[in-house]
Image 1 (cartoon, rainbow, N blue to C red):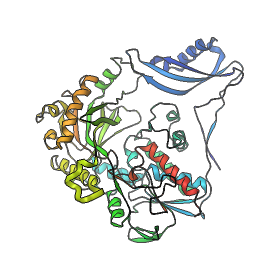
Image 2 (image 1 turned 90 degrees about the vertical axis):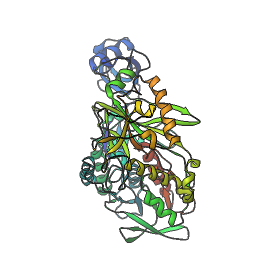
Image 3 (image 1 turned 120 degrees about the horizontal axis):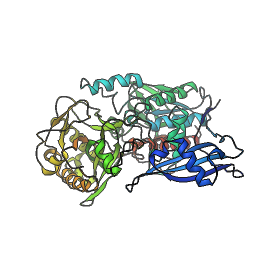
Image 4 (image 1 turned 60 degrees about the vertical axis):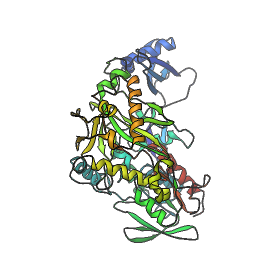
Length: 533
């Protein structure tokens, strides 16, 4: 049996009956299929009635000038061709109920996509997730948003689908070298995501839609003989002769043959466990900072040069500035989004951002991070390769102490942050648990706050009003990427010493975001498929 889904995507041209054309149109025309048909007919020098079917295969926005344009690739069925043939997206699973087992630790993008690929290759994935399934996780996230309770194993970072499930579902990656980005998007569509993600230059599912897609993936894994276990925390490993022989789950030893480690970059206990077990780790550079929020209307006005067309989506931005040899940059930009609490441990404060599929919140937020290097953590040098991890924990604890009760976060207007003064008044903020005025310029480490101040001033020259009192910073944004890398063989993707351990995804230091993590999971699964189990 195969899963089949219609895709708005086709590259076949035959006898001028199916034509592919590229056009630039206004946002209003791009949103009107009848207007598009007329524009396409003009491009093809035929009458609109001669176009029997029309599809969009690529879409992007060009907002470089005041005349906002939408770049489109259109496929047109002309003359005697009535319909555009619809190719299919195919997933070819096997019944793996009695096939060789592969144990996957973590049900985020890397783990889930690895499991799907293993099913195609004829291996039985057994997935262990420390957190709860989507339904249980939603309840715990609701408690966290109400500032009532933090479950260290079920929150915005941990649980079915990983951190991406409740963090926007952006599917854009600049990396084209590690694998097939398109295949990842196709698997999302097969499991219920909108086919629009195959068209848009910056595809996005949305936090309101992604949970159902993730549940569909879980059911696919189970229906073909794989296993997915929740509330299943890995606390140890047993090894012999450079191989893991058992994993310890909830106190029980489970024999294993191949282990794919896909725990995400927030699973600090895994790093500590591996380090204590003598499994090699490496310190790596990462970034930390704050989350900045503005009225979406301000960002729209700047990015779209005052254009107020309802056909334009909520505008995003991408900012970068070099300060004293270090990059300060925006990431995980959430137009029409909200700021969410992303701590995983008690008495620590971490923030992140998310958007629903409609991106219709009145706020726009983005992480603003400062590049950090290993030499920045000298005061934690006694922790060796885990010094960056300790520094991360230190900053999150500092944010908690300078915030309010539980997940109430410290905040400051961007103008006051630059001018080094306490904010007497804070603008309205999307962060549901609440914010409290705090001198973030003072308690953030100087090598971070000084670079942020200069970068905010530079950003204000690119987006007018960015550094005004309408802008607010909320702290801290510390989970940009892993401060630790689990070294692996470049060819086999196994750990450099443990021959049956496949470190994978963001947690191992080899990916950043949903798509790159999914690709890494697929790549590791394919390496396992090359090994005789």
